[in-house]
Image (cartoon, rainbow, N blue to C red; front, side, top):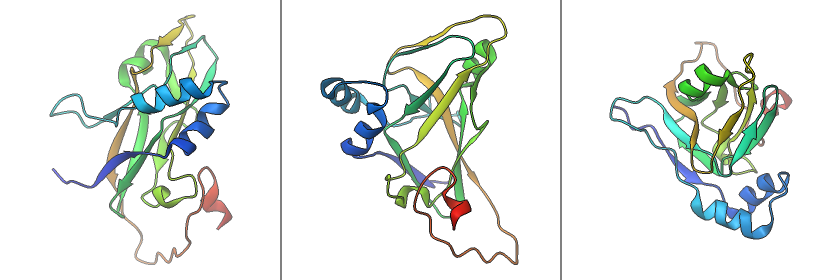
Length: 169
């Protein structure tokens, strides 16, 4: 196995910013931050690192939630973290990431937001199933993958931001 990265918590301030839009008070935000668990693999053969919900949520069919994970990923330059819904939740509820697959680039951790990973989910159930997850339950998984570049690649921009920031370089 290649050791290519590690997970860390973002600062409390970054996490609190992400949680504020959900209407949590200071005490609830502090409790959620103190309870954050770094993503881990469940078994020796697991490829995915499980991300856990920092708060309980309920999604009826068609509803969406944006989750501030409180987590950042540091990784080797030629690797990427791909984020997917947990397989069982996708199978049972058609739980989907709104961007289908989250791509966390190796330079994202150096952004102004400390590389805070947000995961936006939609319950796309066609069967009327309601998804309820408790704080601390695994809902997404991240897989580190290597990537290559073309021989004429000349990328020299520097990231400073999250969604859509590289198209502004």
